[in-house]
Image (cartoon, rainbow, N blue to C red; front, side):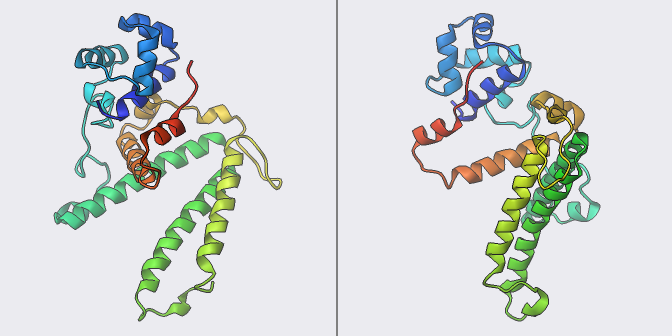
Length: 247
C-alpha cells in the first residue's frame, strides 16, 4: 500500500470534522482497525480503498498519493497555467523541467501571498517577502560566484561571511513571519487580526485556487520527499515524527 495512504485518509477525515468512530461505523469497520489504517500499522484491501474513496468523494489515485488532485487528475507542463509560449517551445527535457519547476514555485507563491493578504498583516507580507528574497539571493550568488571570471566585487558582503549572515537573516524573517501569522506582534509591528483568516483545507484550497492548487500540492509533495531524504532511514523514526493526535 502507498505510504501516502494513511496520511491522506486521516487528513480527509479530520478536515471534514468526522470522528474516527463515526468514520469507522460509516465504512463498516471497527474504530481500532481504522486507527491502524490511519497510522500505517495495517494495510487494507482494495475494496476498502474504493469504499473510502466513495465516502470522501475523491479518487482512488488521490487516496494512494498517485495524483495531487482529489478527482485524480494528473499535472503536466501544459496543464500548469501561465506557461509562456516561449517555455512551451523549449521542448527539450531541460526546458520542460525548467518550465515545470518555475511554474510550481510561481503559482504556489501567488497562493501564499493571497493568503497573506487575508490576514491583513503588513509585517507578515514584509517578513515573508524578505525570507523568499534571501533564498533567491543565496542561489543567485552561488551561481554567480561559481564562475571565477565574474566580478566578485558585485556583492558587498564578504564571501566567508555571507552564508552565515544570510541564513541568520532568513531565520529572523521566518520567526517574525510565523509570529505575525499567529497574531503575535514583534517589535511593535502589526500581526494577523484574526489567525482564523488563514484557515484552510484541501477542499477550500482547491475551490478557491483551482488554477494553482495542483502546483501547491506538488510543491509540498516534492519538498517533503526531499526533506525525508535527510532523515534517518528507519521507518519507525519517520512515522513517529509524523504522528498527530486523533479526533
